[in-house]
Length: 212
Image (cartoon, rainbow, N blue to C red; front, top):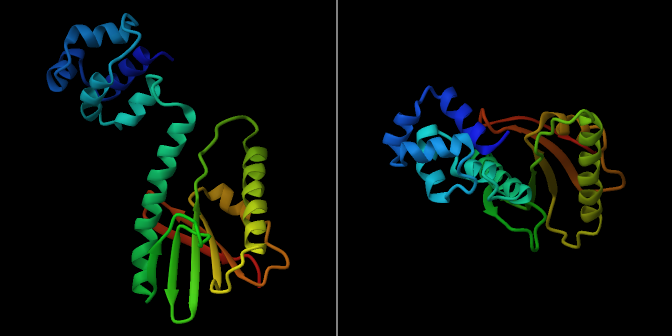
């Protein structure tokens, strides 16, 4: 689907005419028509920024569809938004349970959140998995989950700080969560748990110990 076709479909889904979109965004009716019919191949980012709020879609999504954002950059944007949402959900519960909370960017920690209470130190690491829609989805999900676990368990095995008492790998993809539960760590003395979070509902759905 071309960007023009995408824009036309998006506009129709919102029951907005070309004229109405033009009037509300400040972009000329002629320019919108050129985009939708393919007459305008290189759409100005300023045009995309103007029509985004009218169509109720993120500006970044339009930039992505128009070819300005690479697949990797798009993934990074999604990851960042999901991580921020994860922190918003988990932090209040930790504080209510008496934990002091710090946000990290790795370094000496092995999680996005470091929670401390008395002599306990809990590192919580959020991992984002984009939903795939290919025909081999089950295999790919299993492969992605195990790849993350191999690297995570290896990192935990050589972590040289004695202060951490619990580590949690948190995910918002239910299928990935179910797969993680099937592959517990072996020979790790550190308590390790898996956590499933529903970002849309803003809830921690489940947390289970993977060892001990």
